[in-house]
Length: 104
Picture: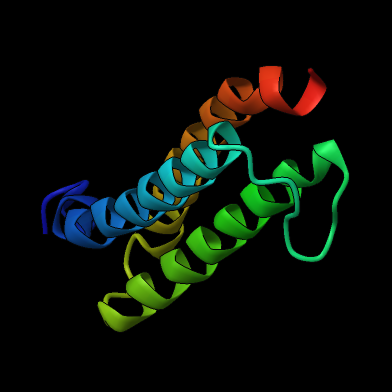
């Protein structure tokens, strides 16, 4: 078996998790800029970060499910780490984008 082939075969699951994170972040950012004042029962201005936390949590769960569903034990940690790291970068960028709304 070629080195790194386990990760190459897992790209569909990795990209799926990144898409979940992007869609969730776009929804949260768009709602933040349209004036949504209450997030998950919390009316404080910083509650938007709680919504982004839920997006990240859904991405982590999606990463674990996608990689377990692939039924390839070799490279599991690498694939799951790539999925979660990409989702964390997406959510961090969304957190920066909503900062003017949350802090303003």
